[in-house]
Every structure is written in C-alpha cells, then in structure tokens.
Image (cartoon, rainbow, N blue to C red):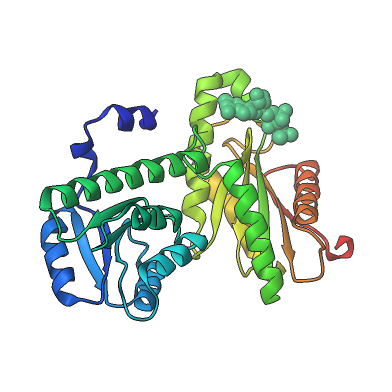
Length: 318
Ligand SMILES: Nc1nc2c(ncn2[C@@H]2O[C@H](COP(=O)(O)OP(=O)(O)OP(=O)(O)O)[C@@H](O)[C@H]2O)c(=O)[nH]1
C-alpha cells in the first residue's frame, strides 16, 4: 500500500514544491524574511491580518500556515482556534511564530491547536526543519485521508465516503429546498460473468464500469461511489425527475458503450447495468435512508423489467 511507501521513504523526497504555505503576519518585513527562508518548499502566499488570513485559508486551503501571534485585532492564538474549530479549514497545519520564548507561550500555541512553535529572531535552519516536518506530516495525512475514502479495487470513492457525503448533500438540499438526485447502479448477470470469465476478469470488469460511470458525470458536485460488490451509487446535486429521465438511460448507454463482452448475459451481448433513480425535494421524503430505499426499489423494478434499463421511483411512494 502507498502508506507503507510513504513511511519507508526519505522525508526529503516527500516534501515536493507543490505545497502552498500561507504566512499571516501584520509586519511586511517579517513576511519577507520568512518567505525568503522557505520559498523553495512551495508557493508562499500571505495575509496581513487574522481576519484576512482566515478568509484566505477558506479560499486556498494551504498545506501549512505560519501564524504570527502579536497582531492588532484578532491575535494569532484566536486565529488558530478559529481555523482549527472549522471543518473547512482545520486540515491546514499551523506553526505559531512569536517573539515570546517561554513555556507558557509554547503551551498556549499547542492548546490553540498549532502543530509547532517557532521563536523570533528566526533561526534559518530551525525554521526550515520545522516547516519541512509539518509539510511532510500534512502530505502523509492527505494520503491517509485519500486512502480512507477510496475503494481499493476501482479507485473511485468507497461506501464510507458515500455514506457521509450523501447524508451531507441531503441535508444541504433540504436546507436550500432544492432537488437532490440519486442513482443506484447494479451490473447485470455479474455472477454469470464471474463464473464464466473468472474472478480476476470480474475485478477488471468492475474497474472498467466504475471508470465508465465516473467519466459519464459532467456536472460539478456529482460523484460516483462503489456501494457494494457490483453495485454503485451516483449522487446528483440539484437534479429533479425530469433530468433523471434523461440521465438514467444515458448512464446505461455509457456502460453499454464500453463494449465489454458478456456472452452469458440475457440482457445484452455486452456488460450492462440496471439503474434505479430517485429525486427528492425538501419535505417530500423524510430521510436520506428513505431515498436510498426508494432507489433500491426502482433498481429492483429495473431488474424485474428485463435489466439494461433505468427506472425512476414513482412519486406516489414519496
Ligand atoms: N470479481 C468480483 N466479483 C464480485 C465482487 N463483489 C461482488 N462480486 C460478485 O458479484 C456477483 C453478484 O451476483 P448476484 O447478486 O447474484 O447478481 P447478478 O448475477 O449480477 O444478477 P442480477 O443483479 O440479478 O443481474 C456475485 O457472484 C459476487 O461474488 C468483486 O469485488 N469482484
């Protein structure tokens, strides 16, 4: 696994210069001095107040923030607490930079959520070593995060990711009173495929279908995840029934177009999928699990109607 490679590799090789480092400091001279020391580690950007630093963190999602403590208005500890308390910004590592060289200040920095602490006057080798270490920690955390969300066989999002983001999307659409779409996609006669072509070829087939489904998505926010063995789930933000009527058959067509031969399918000469779809407008369906249940019923109907087709859940059952 890649995590093993990360742990076994020299740290130097892992700190690539594609990192983004944000310096938050009200003093332009300090910003300049710091950026000269670390500029070869990546792109260095800056903000001259706590408020501007928080806004910039939201926008740019830096890998690392070098945060001055003594600033007018919001001080560094307060900025640090806010950044660490918000799910949208807490993944950026923070090093507190201060002229106070005392245990109390170091403890305050760590308690505010900082990963490390640098004192002024700056000592170049120390600054570089600490920055490099935190960039390495961030790279490793990103990699672990990616692996935790990824399906090992197909490389698309896994069930865990789906479970948390589908619910999140559902809540967001409920709040905004917009329509959310969901499609459950199941490969037809896949047991026969495995039995005839072998399990390894079956794995390869699932990989191709997963990538085919992913390539079929066009709009921002749409994502496909592996829901179970040979089943996939597609989340379709801001999508209503009218759009599902186009999307369902089109998804079937995209998989058929992969032209993966399936000599033992009763539905088609090529690997095909059945799709169950549902859309939900705020208030119509009372939970995201009900939405899943309805998509599952529609999928069952698509199988019963002959497979290689899409069925949309009827609104009467909403
Ligand atoms: N190769 C491979 N097969 C898998 C994987 N996960 C599930 N399967 C197989 O997928 C098959 C699913 O079979 P069934 O649930 O009977 O469904 P089906 O044969 O596709 O029939 P219908 O869904 O009714 O069209 C089983 O044989 C599972 O072993 C996987 O990761 N790799």
